[in-house]
Length: 233
Image 1 (cartoon, one colour):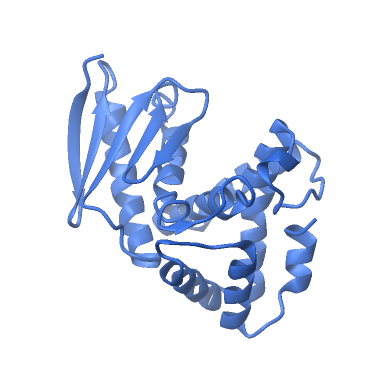
Image 2 (tube, rainbow, N blue to C red):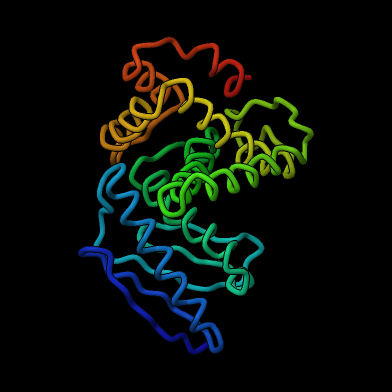
């Protein structure tokens, strides 16, 4: 296929969006979403670590697939502007959680996938305000509703879920847990915790225990009951 490249900058980061014939306008949208989210997450957590970020269309059943400094987006996502924004921002979020802050993706997938979903919610709040954030929260809730809000633990390994259960819990109940944690800690303490967590575990492997310990250190509180209710089997 003949790919064309469109580019935009976010500070010192060059963002390249590669596109196929007929995708020019959607490709320009991906540049805007990537620029906004890279800027947002760099300010909130820790600066984006590379000078380039590339977005390429592929044929896949997933919405997108993340790699360091690169994400591939399903070509079937591009015509749906809202879903395209969600997927691009989610994949950008993985540059922080999976890439910079590593985790055991098979045994503790919530630490990157639920976090990427939470960051997508945070992006909608930062970019568009409370109403759009609430709308995205409803989308996460609808994922969990597919299992009738069954309280399956968020902290299971990938192998601990059915395929439907994995999506509903890790992408639905998981980010809802992080929102519950935000409520429990208070926004100021929670935001400080995530910034400290991002920086402390940059280029390291974090665990669920690390996440809980740093949150408790920041708020000076015991979060065991919350983690027991949501995360642990």
